[in-house]
Amino acid sequence: MTILGIESSCDDTAAALVRVGDKGAEVLSSVVAGQTDLHAAFGGVVPEIAARAHAEKLDLCVEQALTQANITLADIDAIGVTSGPGLIGGVVSGVMCAKGLSAATGKPLYGVNHLAGHALTPRLTDNVPYPYLMLLVSGGHCQFLLVSGPDNYKRIGGTIDDAPGEAFDKVARLIALPQPGGPAIEQAARAGDPKRFAFPRPLLDRPGSDMSFSGLKTAVLRQRDALVSAQGGLTKQDQSDLAAGFQSAVVDVLAEKTRRAFDHYPESANRSLCVAGGVASNSAIRTALETVSDQNEARFIAPPLALCTDNAAMIAYAAAEQAQHRPADDLTLSARPRWPLDQTTPSMLGSGK
Ligand code: ATP
Ligand code: FE
Image (cartoon, rainbow, N blue to C red; front, side, top):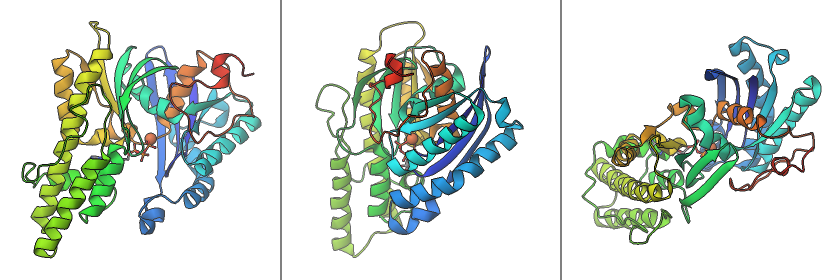
């Protein structure tokens, strides 16, 4: 089947076409229109501006995705759209666009959880068998999931405050590095000494896989203030050392908590640790997770960067998998600002159409 995917839950407007057949899945096209420039002056995503930009760009993204895949709306079998969680104005824009296309073409519509899109990406890219251990680590989320089916997610642990991506972004701001903070910190850390500042490794002294990153951010703030009051500002080397120290603390926490998450993953010959979300593009984090994976004799799967960050191909793919297990949504499909992954949609419970 060929599915059109639509994504607009944060600050990327995206449309994609994915074909799923006996031999696996193929991304026919994936268009992502970012909004970084629109929000740059405000130091964060402004929901109202994001919603307007989505409403303006969605049609164009869908058109481009169809053109790049060299197909028309008549050739698609279904439409998958992110119906939550996310910024409500953006999600509503995407859902309205998808409903319009569904009503006009008669193609079935599937509302998809954005996090399910991320969580199922390793199946889109590598056809990873269920169950697998997933670390979803992005700008807004951080959680370990045992994924046993397209609608079967067990949460093993996660952050109790900030998500790591958010921490990378805030720390970059604190030490005068550009946004998005993740790539800027990774780059600066290459020239830094991770041992110069002793930053905490929060919650490592407690059992389980819950994490915390806000105290780490405060520790960087204190260190920055100490440097600024002692010498009037930060040198380039200070920036690099602060970045390296912060990044190595995040790496240590993620690696140790991943080690513990394996305790919840039943032994089998075919285990995989998969990562998704923008932070998973960090090479220090990837390397550490790969080591933990090797130690547990599991395959390590890190999808290509373009499919790790927000995109619509993952939404199209999630819709394709869910279409095998549940009825389509109807035009009453609504946008959900909050939607924990372990909660199913009404139609998945059989009370839908
Ligand atoms: P969500 O998907 O949870 O709603 P989001 O859309 O903000 O959140 P993504 O697009 O998956 O998240 O990822 C963006 C985040 O990833 C940003 O916070 C960014 O700083 C972080 N990030 C990107 N590249 C890197 C990197 N190399 N190292 C660390 N963090 C990174
Ligand atoms: Fe995301």
